[in-house]
Length: 363
Image 1 (cartoon, rainbow, N blue to C red):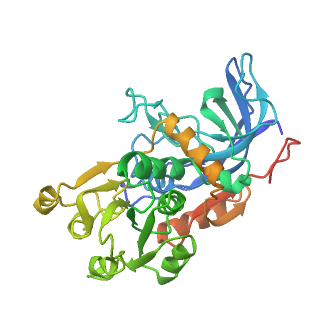
Image 2 (cartoon, one colour):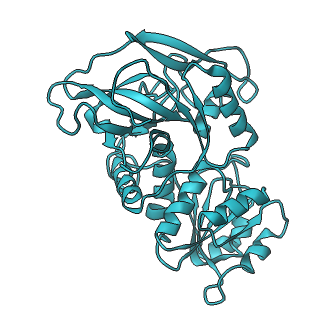
Image 3 (cartoon, helix red, strand yellow):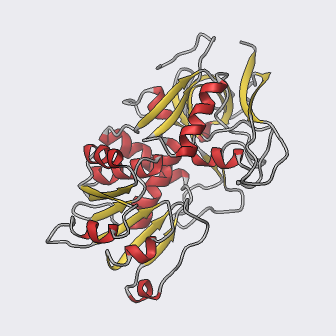
């Protein structure tokens, strides 16, 4: 194959939130790595909600000439001079962001961005080949398949920062609530927290998702469709620790008014998203209870490496909702976006990128 296919969106007229940019495939020459660079042949790439927001023109800095998707697993097929961290044949995971090295507070400068689909990034993983700095790939945990490895980066990093760095509750015996179970971040937080020995409770609008979460180690759960879900959850908490230490939330809405009734004094709400709406109330009752609200957006490269190490040590496998085969199988990929838009998924949605190239593969 002398060309690399890229998954892009096509511009059409429409207002943000009303428009839905169609998917297209473009072919471009396979690049050659320069000094310090590696050429990765992608084997699988995964969707995130930001890709849906990009298609709806609800994400900043959209670029119609940049490949979509932030999550990808592949194999190194060529290296430039001076590369020492990886070699040809190594299975790797691409870092889903750039511009944040190690500061636990936040990005060190103004160059932080998430990979794929924007003016700031030409590192989208929805393509056959990716040209990356050797510092922007990490060895894939050996126990993961290509699909599982591709499903891990963005949600794993976000979940790690939300739970480990921000919540202060990643420890044995702590009580944690994870809202909206079924999404990729919520599920990996559940798995990470269980591996840390915490007691995890979940919310969902689906009884089936609540049961599946219990199979993954959740101690209990309630339907957020109930007006009194906080009372129902309180009744499930241990008698010797009848409160939550932290809430890991991606929805927003009434989480503060409900959560303050469950959290211990000085408890934490670790917020990585607000899918219910872009605003939520901060109440005086939360102030009086010394509740901390902590925002989470992705994380640093150091947190990414720490997360991958923990996942490898504990043999954690991301939950996969559905996979489709073929980067140019646009109808099937459209189906993945539909599942995400309708909230049908339980776990990650992944594209297996077919290859006509004779390169090492773990698929």
